[in-house]
Length: 312
Image (cartoon, rainbow, N blue to C red; front, side, top):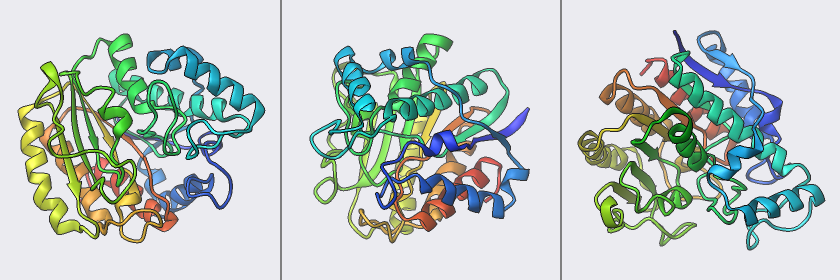
């Protein structure tokens, strides 16, 4: 079995809002350069992106929003939301590549073709069923959860998110779903978009107690993350799942231009390694998420890949 599969290719880089934008197409280039400099390309299986079937959108997004996305992708003008996520010509196809690649990675894991997988331009965790949000035209996290259920019969899925921003599009969509276990580390919503993710939000109805929000104060560093990670690990051990999704946004690293945390890649190494150890034998699908300092995301995502390979 291949140990770790990493998806790279220009088609993934097409999801970006132009040069100079925090979420620009050069994010993939920054990661790939560091990935190759560290020789990780020789230790992983590098896989090209996959095409996405538009039918995958129906697993999560409403018909009205799918129609809007199609229209604005054709025109290349306007906003997909209230002003945070601009449309560009071809954004639908770029989004479908992300969705298709993430679902293909999930399929490869299910079929035993690899032990772990990493998709760098992915983890678009803000989009809701009926709208875009926070640079996220679609929600590939929500789509792959439904894909695992519909295609592979997997029901109980753990979603672990250490991006600086609360993964509100995943959290609130599954807030009343007891079979989606969520652990979400993020900067306290009083200081950062989207302003959500309080500790008292633990799930609703039958899902009460199946979600764990861990808001971090501005300037929080590795020591606090590690201390709080112990609580998260206890929570995950008490709520075992069949599959594990790990969103490893690098915008929680010190020096990101739009957030205020002060982690180092060591926290991402810790989370990846501990999830791997705690659930040995269970495949991990890791998604890049945010990160707008190119040096940070390159160092952080390569640290995640190295951890998936068993380093650190």
